Length: 191
Image (cartoon, rainbow, N blue to C red; front, side, top):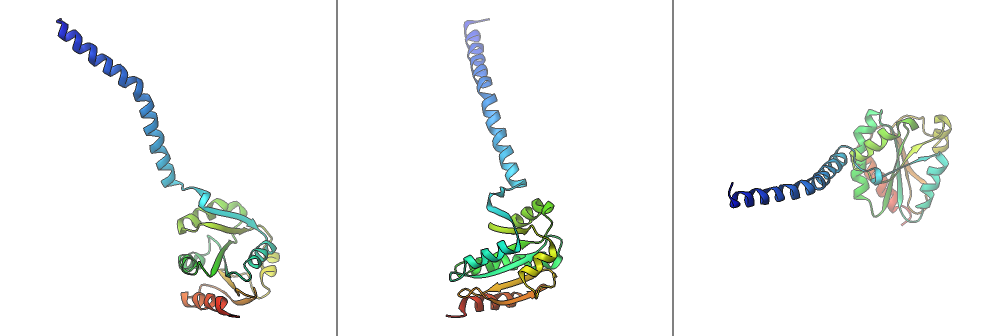
């Protein structure tokens, strides 16, 4: 073996040992990054969705907080309700369209043990911020929200910006125009 061969083997050995000493750290960093990114794709952060349990009185208090500032549309829905799910993207779009003048609150009527499913649905729909899930007996909840509500879903109720009074309400899936007109009325009444 010549001196040049020993020198080359020595340098390659040093490079290899140096690379091996760093590789576990780079490897760990790389795998942590990949795992984080995969988790974010599979299970996005719940930080964007703020799902709170609420009674009817909590919801009515939340609506009252916007009196004089914004019109309020409250949509009562459930993950198992096909018409609710069908109209949901349209309501999300209206929330974006009227963001300056109206607030839209989504209230899930699912059972509390379905909270995770509700959060996942809201995330999939692109809903951020506060959403609510009822934590009260059905009949008591329904009657406290509106004596006119039979309990059918979806149920939507719109409150006037200035007075906080009910401007419109309806059961069942409705066309976008019904929502649009009710929100417009709630914003402009009393102006």
